Length: 179
Image 1 (cartoon, rainbow, N blue to C red):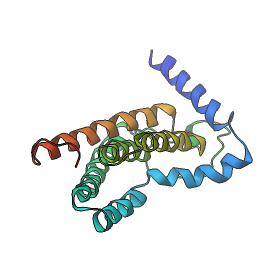
Image 2: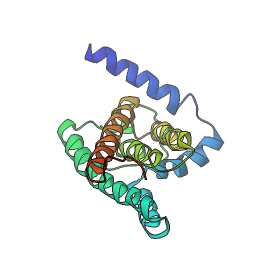
Image 3: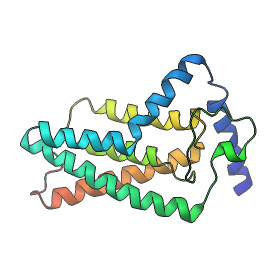
């Protein structure tokens, strides 16, 4: 069964990494992938804290808490599972960036979905945040650093962390999930 799932994961990886290959994506995907980076989300958190109204400042604080939680959880899982990156395991991977850590789960996907959950509780146009998170996941496979299962697991973990933080925040703010 594990070989069957691994085979599907490899085929989905090749479909995105090689099948979608084109010059426009080669230019855009390395930039898009950074929207899920801890540094980008850290800067966004600080900007929200500094420049948003009082009620929305909690959003920035929750994002910082989420980044801390994802860092430790993903670090533990990456070193427990120890899955090599696709470009180290598969032949002829279209690699646009390199990463030095293990592959499973995707930290960018975890951060992107954690942020999407928290941001949707505070801002309008909620579809934008999840659309960007999905694009970050797609980009991680396209640039050759993650399997589809890596980003799917990261998305689930990020969603769980985001909702847990919102629930904890609601407990300490009179039951309100959003401002």
